[in-house]
Figure 1 (cartoon, one colour):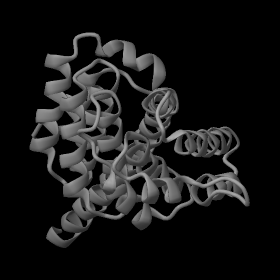
Figure 2 (cartoon, helix red, strand yellow):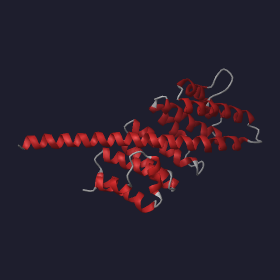
Figure 3 (cartoon, one colour):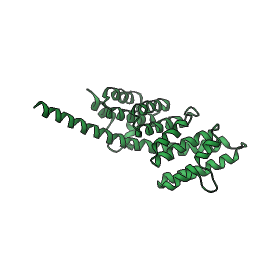
Figure 4 (spheres, rainbow, N blue to C red):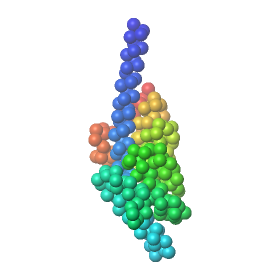
Length: 237
């Protein structure tokens, strides 16, 4: 009888873990989409304005072309376009060259971030994490939370779940808004749940409920989301 109950409990644990992993994947994909959208808009603004009227006109031109490839790649999910955004073509440089040649500038710093997203989209998470880690997340207040969150995604994909949680929580606190912060905190909570750390996940879910009163608007963008209270109840001991 004891063995039967033990096996039953083990099976239930495996099912719960699988469900958590499925949920994690769902929110991970949502966050990636939101972060990329932010980077396309905000990143384009910074790339153009940081060089406007400066003597680094060539770098501005190179960045613009690489961004064009990037945005088309995100729209079509075309791996060849991601490769061109990374490595350039026979005429234009890609993000890797720009990051190497202009690393001390805003555009060079931003190129590292774009390169990391390109590598992640191509499935090379090790190189993605490396490039995202090179991005100076203190460079600006708008892109930094998104960059930290994206690096957290890469860490999670590589199995560094503790590192992923730390980055996602940092990104949430840095963003401190009703759009990105709840997304990052929920994803961090899902990762903690997958590790069996329900008490730590509960703290994050309760933070979402306490600090982001407009969070219910978030439910419009997430299929199957029924309110943060369900997350809280799920992890209560």
